[in-house]
Length: 298
Image (cartoon, rainbow, N blue to C red; front, top):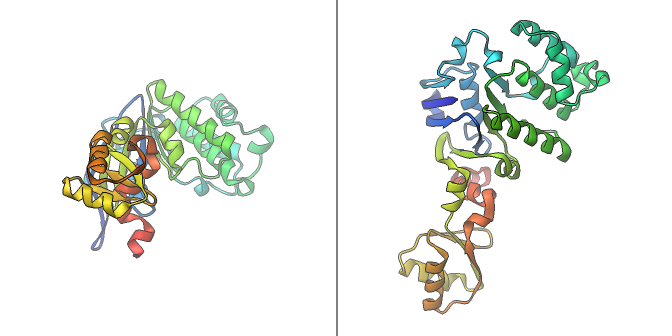
């Protein structure tokens, strides 16, 4: 289990992470979402002892990462697939990790097979790897010690569609066997497919968290009409909160209530449905609207 409590990181007057708290539980995949610069990577770096926190705490299986006697046996980490030693071969990188953790030598071959790196590929120097191959090698290193917890930052970067599906099945199986997975990704569809729980961060603060089904079910109603001004006047008169999206309106009310308002206002609707079906992308954009790069520039 991963537990983050009141975590903050400040650089001068700038709060990169601001009072963040959440829990990633065993047997579940927790999706950690947010725009670029929202604080995801900083939070994960604090979890694994690479960046000191200004305040608060982050523990893995009840202990700080720095206090784990042999961290690789308890938590697998992949934060930057491009940070591997470029002059070593893939096999050498795994062998160094295997010896450091005191594991049997055969574990290296098991991991190479698991991530589908061939003997020829594992014998090449990492500087000659594609990003997708580096991701596979990084996942192999994270899983080498059979840890109970995985912390992965954008592990699907550079993978082709088949590779993304392979990774998704691998992580789903890992969680189903009782492991804890914290997964950061900008590929919202992949998060929507695999995640059980979601933590959404914007400007260093948590803006939403809960199970995927809870957050999507709370999305309200999605409505479309050719007479947007008339409908929004009706919604305001009825005391309903709404937000205008690219080509629709999301209303914080059930579809039947919105339909009654439209009828009373005399507005014809072209679409009326639960916003849950709009999926994770629309929910994400709504929750992080104030922290998107374009929005911030505006």
